[in-house]
Length: 161
Image 1 (cartoon, one colour):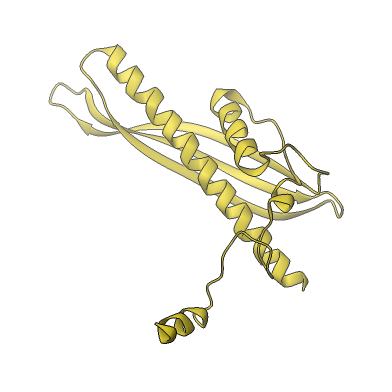
Image 2 (image 1 turned 90 degrees about the vertical axis):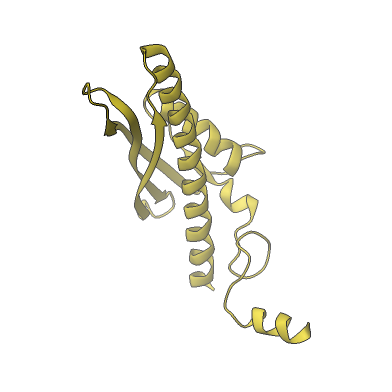
């Protein structure tokens, strides 16, 4: 058991959140001002990010986060009558993190989420499936963005030491 513990400690992995060297604290994440994002999916994404990054509210803003989103739908499977039976909702975007002290962009990355859904015969079932896919894609993007920001800030913290 001791050998297993020692071998894991030498593998280079370390916790992302915490208070040790190179770890991101909640106070660091609370210093990210999340700017408004256009359209309804953007508003929902902003709310989810605020819940994840700033559960106690915005601290003194050190960083500014801008996110752009665009949505597309592609038909993956087509029936014999040329109607779609399976589609994929794609949310593409970009995130830009700016250090407010230096006014420089410190992180700029694309973000993407794809969620598939089954098209029902008749319009209402397809509309419900599409809305559910949009909600899941926005939640997926919120997870991706918060993890990327945490990893970046943890890495940035190690570089400053």
